Length: 447
Image 1 (tube, rainbow, N blue to C red):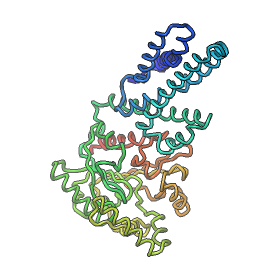
Image 2 (image 1 turned 135 degrees about the vertical axis):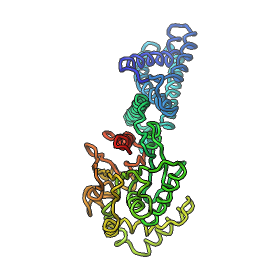
Image 3 (image 1 turned 180 degrees about the vertical axis):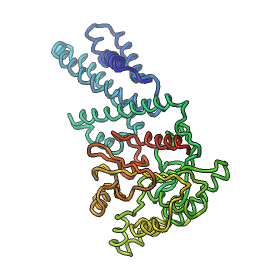
Image 4 (image 1 turned 30 degrees about the vertical axis):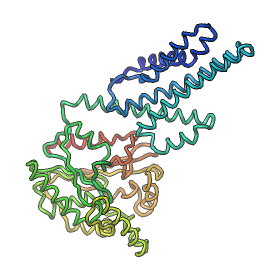
C-alpha cells in the first residue's frame, strides 16, 4: 500500500542516515578508534541495499518492486555521495598528513560502498523499468562518465522510474478498490481485432498492457487471429469465421468488437456481408481510416512499381515465417486509399442491430510519434491536416458516437499509442483506463 508523503520523507531520511553510517563506518572507526563500528556499518549497509523501498507492499508485480528498489538506491546514492564528499574533505584537513594511510583506506572503502550502491540501483532500474525506454538507457550510458551531466541524467532516471512505480501502485489500488464491481464484465465477450501489418501473438501482445487491465476488471477477451495483411474483403471473411467459431464454442450468442485501424473496416464488412450481423452486439473502431488514408494514396502513386513490388515481396516473405498463410501487402495498402474507402462506404451499410461508435486521436508533434510515425506525420499533415501519424482527423468518425482525443501540450496521442504499442505512460492520457471505460460504457448500455 502506498505510504503517506510524511512517512516516505522520514523513511528516506532514516535510510540516508543508515547508509551514511555504513559508507563512512571505516572513517568513524579510525577517528574513534573503535573498529567494531566497521562491522556494524557493513551489516547496516548490506541491509539498506537489500531493503531500500519506501513502500513495502502494493506493487503490481516483482518487476515494479525491483524498479522501486533501484530508484530508491539511486536517490540515496546521489544524496550520500554529496554528503560523503563533504565529510572526506573536512576529515582531510583534520587527518592529513599524519594519518594519510588510514584516511586513504577509509576513502577507498567509501568509494567502493558508493560503487556498490550505484550499480545495485542502476542495474535494478535498467532491468525492470518500462518507461525508461531505449533513449534514456543509452543517454545514461553515454553520460555516465561525464561530470555534472551524469548527475543530471541520473536525476532524470530517478524521476522517471519513481513516477512509473507510483503510477502502477495507484493503478493496482484502483483496480483493487473496484474489484467487486467487475466494471468490464460486459454481457457479451470482447473480440479485439488488430490492424494491418501486425499479428496476434502470445509473446508480444498487439494491444500492449490493455488486455491484462481489462481482464483484471472482469472482461472476457478473444482475439481475431487473422492475417496481418490482406484485402478488406479477405480479412472480413476471416473475422466472420472467427466470430462464428467463438459463438459456437462458448454459446455467448454475440460479441462486442473493438477494432483498431484497418481492423475497423474489416469488421464493418464482416458484419454487413458475411453472416455475423446477429452475432455482433457492438463495434468500436479505434483510429480507423473510414474515409481512407492519404498516405496510402501517396505510396501507391509516387513509389515506382518496381520498388513497390520489392517491398511487397520482402514483407510477404517475412510474414509467412511468422504464421501468415497468404499475406498480400499491395492489396492491404490499396484498400486503405481514399478512393477504395469511399467505395466501401457506398456499398457497405451499418446494421441497425449493431451499436457503432468510434474514437480517433491527434499527435501534436512529429517527434512524439516514435518510429516510423515521426516520418509519416508531416506527410499526412501535408495532404490531410491534423492526424495521428498515419490517419487524418476527418477519417476517424463513424457510428452513433464519436470521441476525438489528444493531450495538452506538445505530446498528443499517436496511432500506436492507441493500442499501447510502446507501453508508454502518457501524461494526461491513461490508455489502459481508456479501454476500461469503453467496456464500462458498453456494460451500462446492456452490451
